[in-house]
Length: 124
Length: 109
Image 1 (cartoon, rainbow over the protein chains, first blue to last red):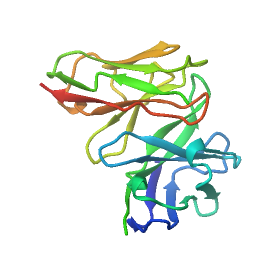
Image 2 (cartoon, each protein chain N blue to C red):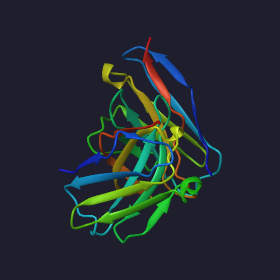
Image 3 (cartoon, each protein chain N blue to C red):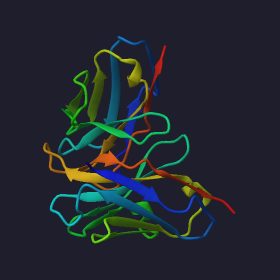
Image 4 (cartoon, chains in turn cyan, orange):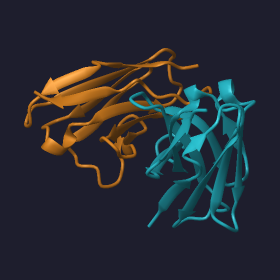
């Protein structure tokens, strides 16, 4: 059974760096054809894709946030870490991590299982 | 950047009725990398459909997707009380960023 759980601070001050950890079980991120990604959702708003790291350490970032985001994996701990620098109030959101697999129709990676999310508030 | 526009914003229907949700892309998809998610209050999104028309595991067959190019549709053939939620379309291939639509809220009439 695949599970994912996000952890990190609930409150961050403007200009600080946010560090979020996705702890997962039920799969290995060094196995072919797996990825872990991050998506966020401001309160009452739509979802926003942020970043994705693949089993082979390839990474994809939202272009508009690329200079602020870093995604890394620790396969020995079954963790994926997302860092976002220079946080601002507009970054207040629930942050989700998700398990990605290449789907059978197109071969592109789709997020099939998500963690419950963690709410991060940016305020002084 | 591909912009996904969902319509309607809110759909008011009764249990037992048929729901049709639309998602239009600002660029033609070279492949059907379009998914649909369901989200209930306080919960994470749940994958319903991928590849525009393939149901994810354990998704009831009252959910169906179709479309290609720029126009995609999610249909719920006969609404159950648990289907009232927000639905998002999402493209996960093609140019970055992979984006989501703004959502369609399905509410009980």
